[in-house]
Image (cartoon, rainbow, N blue to C red; front, top):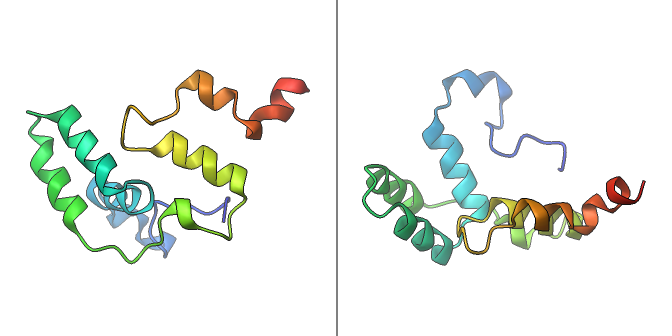
Length: 109
């Protein structure tokens, strides 16, 4: 799974027909809980993008949130969830990400 294009279409031949809206919808379905979407909306407050984000977030999703995926390496899952969190206060900083155990070999080697 770690090698898959998780934000892209299931059929890669459809990639050129995808727009930013569908990519964002997938990102929300995998990484944004309700509290994180609300935090992002507060952050964007008067942006014209708020209405579009609200519509995308309201779509039903058939995808399993990344945080609950038992088939993924726990360290990878933790890192990705931290990097992709929609709540900017919970999202990993660069320093925190580089200190993550997934990068131990790069730091130590």
